[in-house]
Image 1: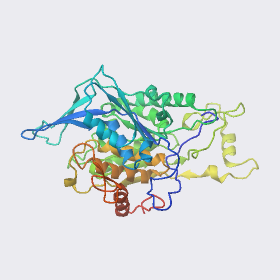
Image 2: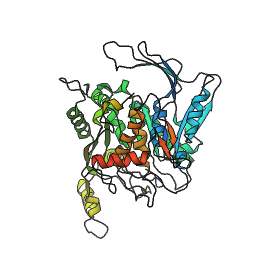
Image 3: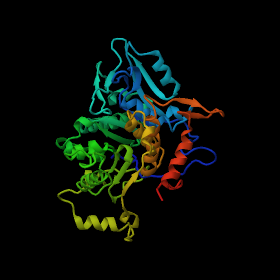
Image 4: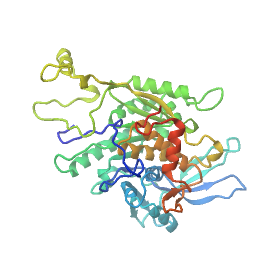
Length: 437
């Protein structure tokens, strides 16, 4: 890391807003808190007869993750801190653009009359598995790259949501970092948070090494239970019940983190009706947010995975860690992060409340990422994610934005802050610490 680089920390906490504002409202100058490089897609959904099909449904991983961040970002100001890109083709429906525009996000519409909008077909066609939903692209997809952010305010976001393979994740992190440093004034570069959502097709044992090589570059890696199991060669289900196997989730996380060096790595495993499992290994703490790292000619940069080299003098190394310049024990350097291993429940406990699970995982990560960007700890960030996902799956398509009798913002007729308060009370999460009691 360079002299001007500052490091972000997933577990960092900041003081909450005072007065009548919610946990996510503040009065700072407008900044970009969240950007997704997931795609915007328009979906058509085909059901088994006699139920009619639905067309021009707003979808895509980028859309739902941006929505997850937007749920905690009331208009007209904080909503602009949610950045994303929507590529419009010649067939882009005006009704879709009106809906997206009504969210008042920091969206960038890019119109290209020479192509069609990215569209997908979703079909419930299996007679033996009624909930199985097939998907395929019906127009050429337009994937976003780091260069799409160059020269825009989106590049300076506090957090980035990446939906991709391990190899592409590394490429995106490196390119975003390079462009960001290039466009930052001397001494002002700040490292953003990277939230990585692996694509299911490449969650295989053959990609496990690539996954572990990618973990040091991101702040949170969040596959779902099946994707995590795929890296390990399984399916994540209980062989007797066919349900999500929570013990297998915990075991796979333990195995994966045990293979990593003694540095903090955070896994958040999305597990449907079981909620999510947080696994962060213990070890030395990362430098707090805002800490500059020297790179002058008298200082060696830390190498990846702790910085051990073949010529490292171990006795001198440990002596340096144990003592400060006056020879006293440096207790802060000895502090060890105990890690986290805990489940955060899903918002909905009644399956009848779940109309369509599409986009629930992406929405979860949007809520989680924006919480981390605003200084919340990982457990509270997952609570934000659970509430966001709950709103996403209550209907087909995206939740509905509205106003209550007092003119306050609602989604699906409820205020997000009220739903968040009730959820935290239900799971015993302390408001001040953001941790479960």
